[in-house]
Image (cartoon, rainbow, N blue to C red; front, side):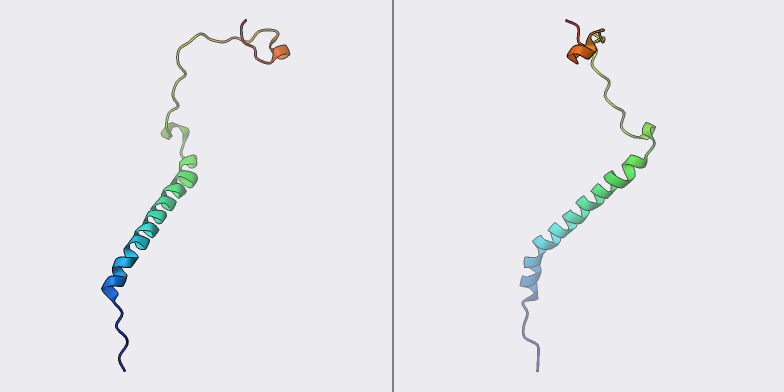
Length: 74
């Protein structure tokens, strides 16, 4: 008794999109693991440097900052 014919070439073509999707999902998971677990443990000088604030007038707190909450000059 011989096994039935299983169109293996046709089945292989039908599985390609699923296998590509699994590979992409594993790649995204690996990137997320690196970002979440490894990057926070790097010393601050090896992480990306923050962008400096744009040059502009300095805002100084006034004595009545507690009253209006803003502390902006009027």
